[in-house]
Length: 165
Image (cartoon, rainbow, N blue to C red; front, side, top):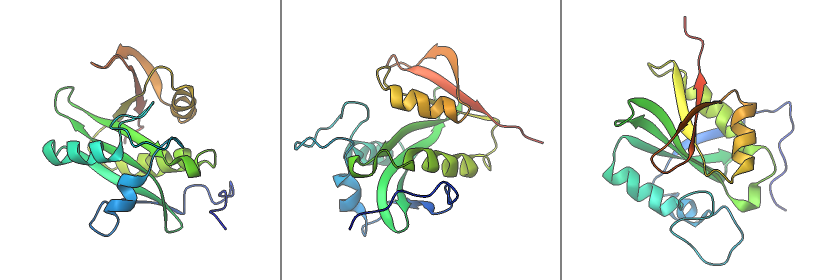
């Protein structure tokens, strides 16, 4: 059966960002970005969900959300206010390998942008592993621009500026 690819007119309306709870914890930690059999602490382009949840526990400024499409968990995102840099930062976006190529990353980012625009900020930042061309294409298609800077991990730093009244 499987999940259908969302129709373009549906856009991100059926995407939900939900808290990680005891009810969805195992499903959340079992998501992974590649079909590789083993479960790694750090995957090719993103830290594992288990690592992200542990990081959010010890660094409470980071919030982890499961990404759902029509009731099915398809990925996760982690974001928060980076205390060192003093700006809002999307530190993780991951779509499970079973659901990649269906637009869920874009729809989830649109939903997240809608959410973060309510924060007291005029911009939000993100970064990605330099070899991750899919992430670069996604973020730039949504209006993120390279700042010219890099993170402490050597990842290019991108920024999305909001029009605030």
